[in-house]
Length: 466
Image 1 (cartoon, rainbow, N blue to C red):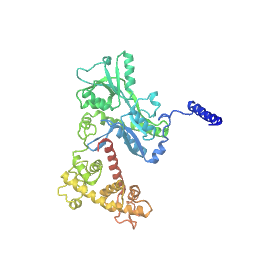
Image 2: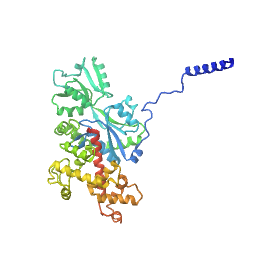
Image 3: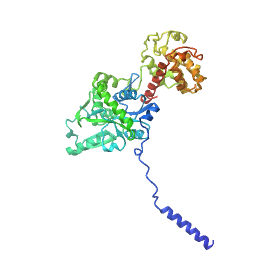
Image 4: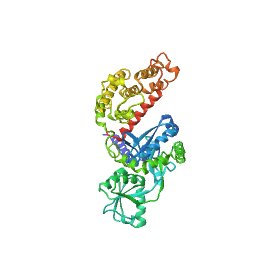
């Protein structure tokens, strides 16, 4: 190798060494998820047509009882969504950091969990006006581990939900009373911590007074009388760059306070002890049980026959009869799936009050409707909406709307396009159209019916295992 080549090789190696040793000044740390929240304020939410809220699955917030979606926060949010003119979609999360992450990434619009606002939390979100006031209490058993004063927490271990204000409260308490107190944070729900106290897995936890009172109603072993803090205002979280949404929610909060709606709900969920007991201890509650109804087993068999998620069929049964096997409508429809006499006869149902017969007849009718729409709407998820609409109003009326969608150049394999014309079948200029064969129909009722069945199904999917 010549001296010139050696010299150039040396220069290349030297330059590479300098480059590799040079600090990468241009490299920057990735921004925190809360530093640049998604741009999604009320106008965009309104245009999208739905608002997403994070809630907790508990005996007070959001759950299913005998097939019906219930919960204090759920009913508040449903009222808010109606006020805003949008649909409501709920997301269940126990992890507060995950909830804030969903919020800032635009996957959720509200975190409907009771937050005491402090400077640390203001990093992650903005907050609404107070939706409630809340005090915190010690949850403990009435056994030999029972304490009567906060000073007796010295040398004790208290388990709390991770990311909550309770840690700050207990640390302040420990400092002011000079307690040797151990605080252990767990990434779980408040209700799970209360259950751990009941099962003697832990001795003490700290939770909001409302959820403590509800659980103490049906668990005699619990004592929830020892107060950690006086009542403090609590708010919901929204994105820091969503002032329109914040203003709309604050207007709504003022309205439900003024009209007494919030007070009525509070009494329903927290002060009516009998109802709280039944809702929270029933086998047909998503909080304490694992069933939607007494008919889950035969509903699952029918769903297998249909090729449906059993929770969708359960939502349809609830919508039709509220799981009342002897229900009779004003029009003469009977049984779990509210079949008319002509349908009962056609599908061989001899005793419509027999849950097995009624459900089997309804499933056979649904299978018939599936066959009717199979070639017309090949996509299974879309076809199910056509089937539900046909079950409600008759497939002739739905087919009319299907024809009209085709006539006006819309994709009539998509439910939303067909629903548009079905909603208008009560208008003379529509039901007198030559393409319409079945005449007048209150199609808007059917469109709402499909939406409500699917809405209930979405709740079942969130709260009940498949």
